[in-house]
Image (tube, rainbow, N blue to C red):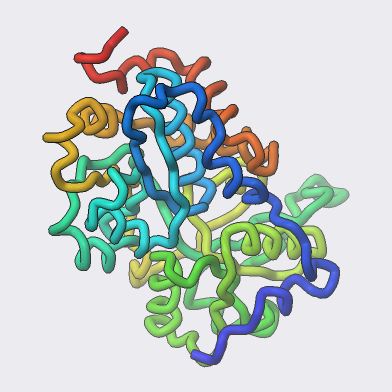
Length: 321
């Protein structure tokens, strides 16, 4: 593969130095709400990656520990491999951010024997290459017929015939993300490595590139996944993957360090009980995105107030109020 270009190549000069659409302020947000929990109790430490799904789920678990159980919780943003390593080494208590069995396959192979897998906390995830489904503006012509989609490619193999239209670029995210490893494999599997470059960045830069292309009605293909707030706000389509490089539906798992059940059984039980669905996650993600990531903890509290029955099911029986 050719050396990756910077994302500014795809965004154009108008976006040089542009701020994040979503993640701005999330790093500062991680410590909010600490006063709600008892300072006399050892904090639960959770690792997470600053992707929209994991920002939502990890802030929700933090709010649950602090607001419902009175246990302080610290959340620590990391890169994917670093996150797995932290759980394996016991420097954090756990994470609710493991995409299995395929996306984080390499990390599971490396660290799986050193962590405890509590199983899925959300099922039915999907990832792959994504294109805009329709143009901006009017979607039907004078006769009422649906206009042609902005990008009429429907499968990954078709990308080879339209490399120029895509500016020979696939817009990616963090270089350590599982979807990036899968995309590198897809480029080789479909013979695209000499036609496309995988552009490294992060989630917010991928979103900016996608939205800029939609506004300017340019062709674009990005690494995408569900659940994600983008799918609730824009008409997007996964490209067909006949070789099944990206796998089928996956799940997001909760992992904890060895020994957690013995030394903190209430924390173990609460993490084991935590689960929700894509609709519920999308609701919280959309609230956080609306506020550009500044009030993730407060939005998690709001979510818990609306979903009291779901939250009650996460409370360990020994601490139920």
